[in-house]
Image 1 (cartoon, protein in one colour):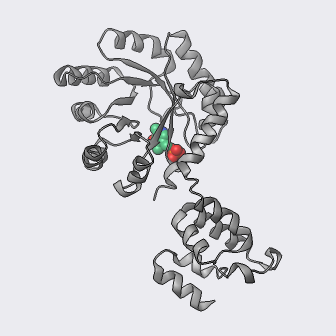
Image 2 (image 1 turned 90 degrees about the vertical axis):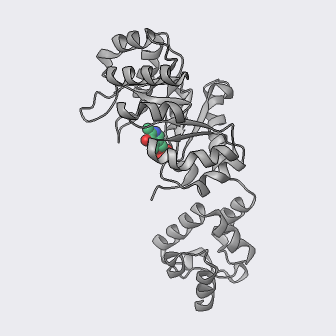
Image 3 (image 1 turned 120 degrees about the vertical axis):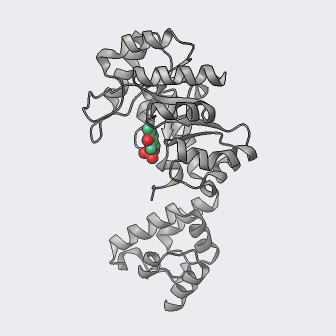
Amino acid sequence: MALLARDLLQSGEARAPFVRAKMIMPVNKARPARQIRQRALKRIVIARIAQQPQLGQHLLRRGLVLRHMHVIARAMDSAVSPLDEVHEKIAKAARIARRELDEITLIAVSKTHPAERIEPLLGQGHRVFGENRVQEAQQKWPALREAFPDAQLHLIGQLQSNKADDAVELFDAIHSLDRPSLLKALAKAMDKAGKQVPCFVQVNIGDEDQKGGCPIAELPAFLGAIRETDIPLGGLMCIPPADIEPAPFFAFLDKLARDNGINGLSMGMSSDYETAIMQGATHIRVGTALFGARG
Ligand SMILES: *Cc1c(COP(=O)(O)O)cnc(C)c1O
């Protein structure tokens, strides 16, 4: 057992907590699961395999997988990537909602993740990504875009008016237009750049004090102001209140969009994108389910 642990550590693919679990053994000598008392540790190990496909594959190759973990590692080995999994769930939700797949854009939210984590998704053919900070995107994306010129970048985070020029230059869509001062700055920036970037109006759908977004009561007037500019209106966007069933908020955003003659709906994140699709989302913003937890 000690040998195996050292082996794995040296391979650089195992992290200390994995090895400390002391649960790695050849498949053919695997003890029945009931003999394993450290259930909490078992869960950690499984979570680690799930988060690290290479580790799962490495263990599988070397026959170092417990019987009940075998299935997980095999799934990894047959190349079911997180992207495939998310696509499958999108397709299922769309089927239930009787919606066409091409109405739904998956935005892979790559914020905080380095280029090395983004490249595999690009390699799998995914092209639409989301970042929440202008500066971070400026550092990561020019090089990635050189390699993948058809990649599209959406800004999903709050935007300061003084960064409007940079945002217009870098992004293909902006999901956080939420106030008249920013509208003015973006209109000016787009005029200057000769580039029209579709904008989603972020709505403070739960009327939360501390949250960004246009207050619901001010939405009609704000949409009117946008329509007086050349800015293409991409749709409405929301982040529902935390720790409460999101479906009613998604449905409300859908109603606001219909009432105002708008088609685009940017809503749904890793924990609720299927619900959002059933409520009409056209753009889902998914980070954790594709890249794992942010550090
Ligand atoms: C980070 C972020 C997401 C993605 O969240 P996950 O839960 O990781 O999928 C979506 N939308 C916005 C506005 C975000 O900031």
